Length: 388
Ligand code: ATP
Image (tube, rainbow, N blue to C red; front, side, top):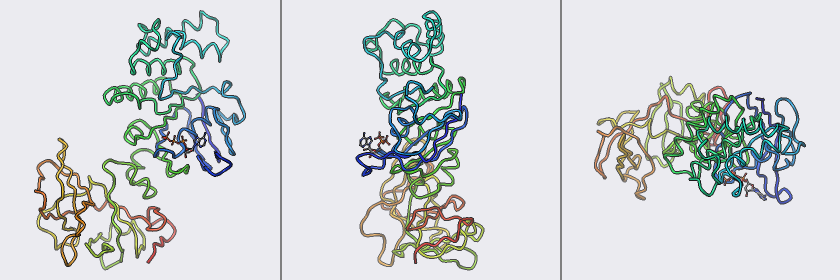
């Protein structure tokens, strides 16, 4: 068990033309489970490989349990990694695969190794597979063995590189729970890389969001969901994605008036909510999640409702998704016909395609972002200065 610290960790490739990881600072507490998420190419695997010692950082330091391991060979770091493709030795039995790492990294006797493998196999429910070779196993069983092989070493740090991506959806859900249970039981500091934001949100004590090699936000899943630091995080976390609309903000008596930049709609936040955004004025981006949009009856003239035309109604069983063309201008709805706004509504809200409905937003869940930088606008920040 150990605390893991990354200090200004950087990795360049091709003589600096590619910056895979850009000065990353991160502290993972002893026993904490951190998920790292971001789009393809954002630097997730490179970060993990540097922690494992498989990739040498261009600059920055890595500390495990307070000890600087940046220049320590992978074999001498007390770290176990689980890969997407299992990385099992095909000609060794499950037992031999599990014992191999122990043989390399400890001076245990053969009996001690056999005992440790047997205990771990029991914990993982794979005792019956010990004499099989990987070719005889299903994908789920292989991943169980790969996990067992990591666990048997009782490492200081677990690293998971998209370990469930090759499994079908049902098995993935089962394995997620299992990994969480094991991690809790063993209390081993863990970093789990995935491109699946739902996986990251459900599994992590905290979640790290990367984009283009840069850290975007670290926080508990609910914090990141409720208070995204910027537009990238807001759009990446949550499914369907947060809706964004370009608006002009203008403080008015009793609130903040938001007008679509194409003047397609107007919406007013109450003074109570407007306070959260400080003295914002001018061009910014309104963000609201589909689950915070509701259909209200006949209040299009109200300050806090916006007319919208229904383009698609998509029932998903528990709810309906409405794809909406938001707002009107003098000549009617946007001519492009593209549904640009999604609402997640109860199943009894089922308008017809082409209907015009009034939508309202849960204003406590409305976000504003700087139009240039994408940073979330907050009252506590330095005076937000969106462009005019
Ligand atoms: P994915 O989810 O697709 O695996 P990732 O977030 O894990 O992506 P990395 O594999 O860490 O991303 O790659 C980060 C960036 O570094 C990418 O632009 C990638 O092309 C580049 N990169 C990674 N390894 C190398 C390498 N050995 N040589 C050159 N460029 C590399």
